[in-house]
Image 1 (cartoon, rainbow, N blue to C red):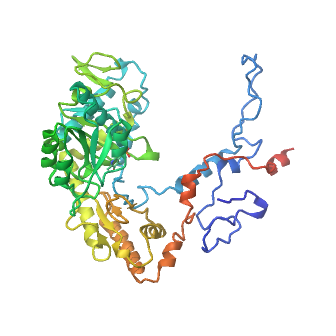
Image 2: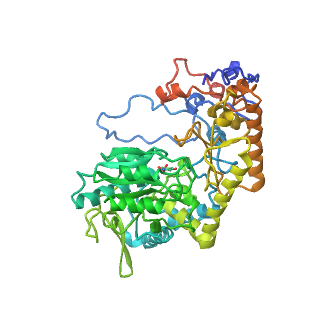
Image 3: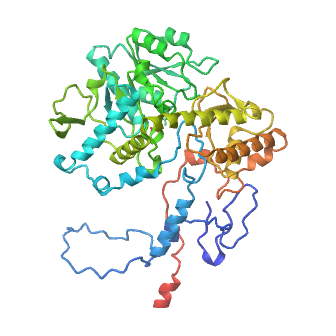
Amino acid sequence: MANSQDRSQGRSGGIVSGGAPEAATYTGNRALQIEEPLIFEMGQAGRCGVDLPEPPKVKDRLNGLRRAGEIGLPGLSEPQVVQHYTRLSQKNYAIDMGVYPLGSCTMKHNPRINEKVARLPGIGDLHPLQPVSTVQGALELIDRLAHWLKTLTGMPAVAMSPAAGAHGEMCGMMAIAAALEAKGERAQRKVVLAPESAHGTNPATAAALGFTVKPIPANDRGRVDLAALKAALGPDVAAIMLTNPNTCGLFESEIVEIAQAVHAAGAYFYCDGANFNAIVGRVRPGDLGIDCMHINLHKTFSTPHGGGGPGAGPVVLSAALAPYAPYPWIVKDGDKWRVAEDGAKVDGAPLGRLKAFHGQMGMFTRALAYIMSHGADGLKQASEDAVLSANYVMAALKDVMSPAFEGPCMHEALFDDSFLKDTGVSTLDFAKAMIDEGYHPMTMYFPLVVHGAMLIEPTESQAKEDLDLFLGALRSLAAKAKTGTAAEAFKAAPLYAPRRRLDETLAARKPILRWKPSNNPPETDPLKQAAE
Ligand SMILES: *Cc1c(COP(=O)(O)O)cnc(C)c1O
């Protein structure tokens, strides 16, 4: 990113690479696409956005530890700061801007009622260190959400504190380890089975807890190969970690038999619940024989992902694992709620503690608002619409792209790259060309069981006409690729994005995470000069 800050020369040059139409503007901006330097590059010594009186002279109590040099904050006016961050915010592609078909991530609409409720002063201004007598309503809210999560999954207990899906996996697998320990089988059962299509966090969780991961192959229907699974089960197996619907977007139709075989071998069944949004209101995982499952509130229950706020990954637990749920436990004594913190006597043997405080209160509030505003019928319809949308995508694209498996899908449509064979266009090129069409690409190269995978999850949020426009764009890209003469154009994509193809390998191997001031003398500030 070679942005020169030399205003006398303008900022253009270096903003695009790879033989694109070089922006020939003085500023480097293109229409309303503003070329944005770092705030540190924009800052000027001596400029300040506030006008405070000189602090009174006070006795130095720092005992010689007073900072000697400048703190190095960028100097900007208030409008400069506001404009900078507003422009940055507009560089984000967001679910509030358009179709966001990232498979497995469930980028669904975040209803505004959730945001409104989470900002009510009695909720938004809570502090986790407040006396328990002042947060009775908040504790009841957590318990209400826990109640609905247990009801929707058909499970007797839930650990609310994990802060993400992966954290929930850790929690659930630690509960399994604790149950094995209590039975004296922890040393003997060292193996965790995970299908080849598993999300990377599954084997990572198992390995982090000292288990050995044994992959289970998929059959040609994209489901777990039951015979291979049965052959792998034995007295050394602690658990299976299985996603359902799985990461190919398919329901594991033999899941009950899988659960029976796993339990018959003395092992536990961890279900990765990241795709619960496809079956809420239709299937209760507890009825399928699972022992624990995390629920990504930021996927299934629409709380914002990542930059929009922290995630939350509560874990529902079977009766066998419930005693090991981590602290804190939210307990009701008579008509008063209390928080049983580390070491408190509870009706079980908690495995310890996974995080500070009680979980992600803001996310709990949003998820509960989502559940209550939808009601039982609405939740069921959201799942059905998500599945309908994905099958619509599948039906609309199957003649021009190549579905990875035959038959209908659940909430996401999976394609392989065989439709691009001999075109010179790769899955990556195809995804980059989608950016030029104004779409965030789908999930690429995951799951690993499918060559050049493209996983499209439309969710229930998109209007049909918006989905149609998206599908039209994909159809036109597929047709263009198949002419066999478009490889060069695809390799150059994206043409219209503020940045072109970045060197992703270099960025991953040698990330530059810190801005360093250049050796150039700071620019003179014309305003300051005028004042002097
Ligand atoms: C998202 C996801 C996870 C991990 O959840 P995080 O909340 O991102 O930690 C695990 N498994 C699957 C299948 C997922 O899609």
